[in-house]
Amino acid sequence: MKEEIRFEKGVNYKLVLPAGSVHARFRDDIVNEKAVFNFVGGYEKPIPPLNYVWCSLYNDHSDILNVVSFYYDRPVRVTEGAKLQLLEERPENDDWKVIKEAEAYLEVTEDRWVVSADFGGHEMELSVGYSVVIPEGAVVADDGDPVINQRSAVAVGDHSGINDIGAEGSGENAVLYDLFGRKVTNPVPGAIYMKVICK
Image (cartoon, rainbow, N blue to C red):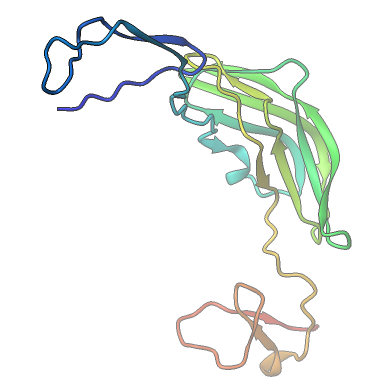
């Protein structure tokens, strides 16, 4: 049975073949001299990533951003000077811009480690996309391996992504849209649609 041996990265190892441990195939009197092989290990144990398990934004869909909290199920700490970021989508440049930063802080309660930041009642526009970002390295595991978080972004607000739908009729002639904002010409019984009505 073959057994796997893992040589830890950065550690110096020595493999020794003792003198006389190997001989020629047909001559027992011809044997090896002592041989030594030095090498440095390269094995890296896969370390589980550091991810939050819940975010307060999952059930807070208001357009005013106050305290945002990320819940972890293992001991963590916040690195010195860490900030959470509020990003605003800039469609004209096809990118995102940091519009506000808030200092991250930690609260520990009953096997929960909660990293939070207060964005001070920032009002968000309905037609703009927003995300709250935990920058890479803002949170560090406080037990076992010193794992840092990867960059994480969570969409903010209750925006469906349906923008600028024009009213092309009213009453019985109102135009129907599905929940993805696509115009529906042949509605199917039992499906949910939105009707745009002008008053």
